[in-house]
Amino acid sequence: MHEFKLPDMSCGHCRAAVTEAVKEVDAQAEVVVDLGAKTAQVNSAATREQLAAALTEAGYPPA
View (tube, rainbow, N blue to C red):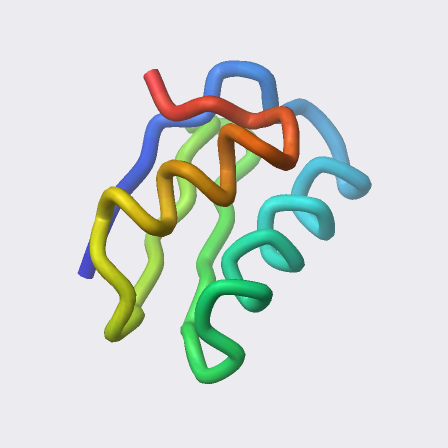
């Protein structure tokens, strides 16, 4: 399980974009987004680095 702090996330569109970015790396990933805390918890076989790169490319660089 990886947890990412995503300070640029603020709305439902952000939640969808973050989820989509993770799913592009690992279609089987489980993603739980908490907009209030600005975090995403990801259960995935992908590495933290792969996931962070995908989130950054989508416009949500982890803090």
